[in-house]
Image (tube, rainbow, N blue to C red; front, side, top):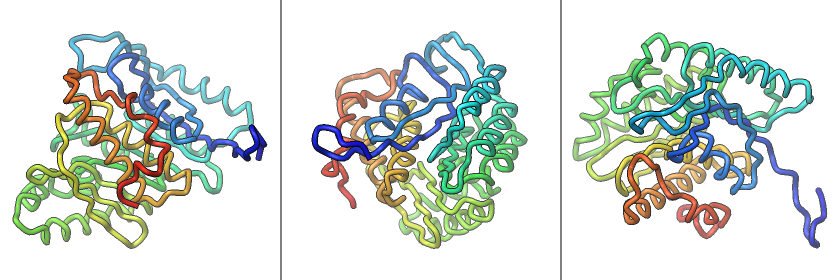
Amino acid sequence: MADIAGGDISIPKKLAVINDLSGYGRCSLCVSIPVISALGVQCCPVPTAVLSNHTGFPSEYKFDMTRQMRPYIEAWSQLDIGFDGIITAYMNYEEQVKIAADFIDRFRQKDTMVFVDPAMADHGRLYRGFTDDYAGYIRDRLIRQATVIKPNITEACLLTGFDYDRVKLYAAEPKLKRLKAYIHDMVGELRELGPDKIVITGIERNDRIINVVADGSSVSFISGRRSGHSRGGTGDIFSSIVAASLLQGMSLERAVRKAADFVSMAIRISDEAGVPVNEGVIFENILSKLASTSFEHCK
């Protein structure tokens, strides 16, 4: 502990984040770095690619970092450092998944949190360029190493073989009994892969969004009103809040509620301000709220 201005200040925990860097459009590392820092955690980026802007724009410049990742990581290994947490997010190729898995093996300590966002699919289908083989590679190389995973409902179905269309059918029913039973079974399959903490996001039900939080033997369904347009980068913000909050000792359910509240607010003010959808959310205006306990509506 160091004494600064009359108060004790602890050394921030370190969170390595493996993701791309998109210079414009508010996503990936450009949102993770400020969000994680605002929560009092040191963000240590491992860029998988450098883009002028994300791919939701008509064109972009991209520099793939696959060949640079190993020497970048090797330089870190010479420093004899470790990390309290590691996040893996969107990756372009199986080789990058392998590098991320090797990174976990190299830098993981006894209590290191490994947070995996599969980032490979949405709305019932894989992202362009990905195959079922890639989904299996994510499952076998990363999910099995994770302590925390955050798939959206499409990714959770791909990882377990459950039926996405059945989830949509059950979510549309007046009662949630069949949906909850189906998700409970899905959570059980995900637990068999290794992680003890599971967050499944983005189950759509009329004008609401349901997130599922499974921590140990408990499973909770958190429902919130859809706040506006779907925007890129919100998943990166969500993951960053949850991971950093867990490192600060917050419970998983409380961290998910905080992340969902923040993302919902950011979407709402972005819509009200008329921000183009492909420019993400104007989270900068409310970033200071993350450090405030008064922001947490549900404790």
